[in-house]
Length: 422
Image (cartoon, rainbow, N blue to C red; front, side, top):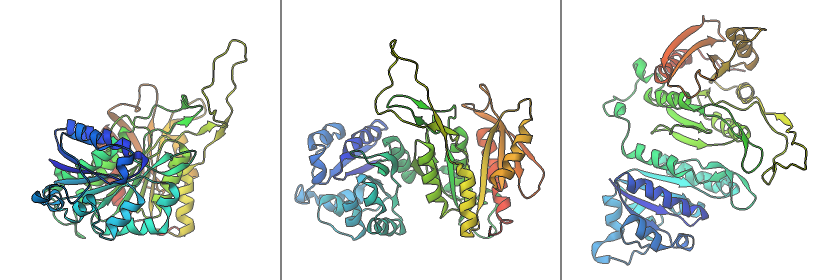
């Protein structure tokens, strides 16, 4: 596949080298088109060495080949990473003042932007309008990751990891085979497209709560179930956003990925995505507690000092907050929670799960019994789906793909019965 990799003028430009490597090692032919500003961060020699092609950002080089037209026409895919606020603005307004913006105007194939900028720039009304303009034209604009930015700043604005961009880009150029012969959804859409026209946000993976620059509190979640749910929702016709904490498996193609690390970052991303979602699925394993203080330096093990005492504070109840947010807005929305439970001398798994369903206020609760050799990291699962509407429990067992398909079918059947929560 012929790929044009556009590189914008931000400090995250160095990460584009890893993205280029992923493309070339997968056998794709990549031409790099950097902006003039980006060459202040990564030089032309780097791009030429890694791509095996000459690199320029001028429309006046190779004029005899009409390069500013040919690149866009011949590209099977154009990826811009990092996409700065300036570059998004120029693309949205149709400017053509360098080779990259010329190439974007001539594009015949899919185009993907991976933004990277400071939080205030990303959240500025002008940038948001430019992003919406590009998306309205069928161009894919990923949401930036949430985390540490240049200097001491932290928030949404980090360039998504190269692997995330790689998967999203190839999904655009090679859509899932299930989609190739699917008819246009209608009101009589079959069960396999039960979420056609719906927007679904799914959280997955395990959060990590930093203790110092090296250590964190985490859990055993692999993200396999959340990823399988995202793929099943996609195959059911939904537009899917996957809010991904730490995962041992890659995100599926054809979904938008928002990368997070901590419970607070996941909370922010879910609350933002929920505003535009018909369905919310909280499948992530969110840490109940986080360290009350995070050390700026690695905590040392010293013979001349007492062992450190780690104080914990409770993380917010994200699922309950999403239910409250829905009720306050009077929004028609289906909310699904996941409960990883163990029994003890005070009660069994289903007893704790029913109490959690009532306490959280969600519509469905998917319950599984967990343990060191159960669920986490495994390819199979066994769950019980509980309903707040009073329907009897539904047991599902099989691979995580099969369990996900059953959960998505249940969500599809429940959507017709959802009423506004006011």
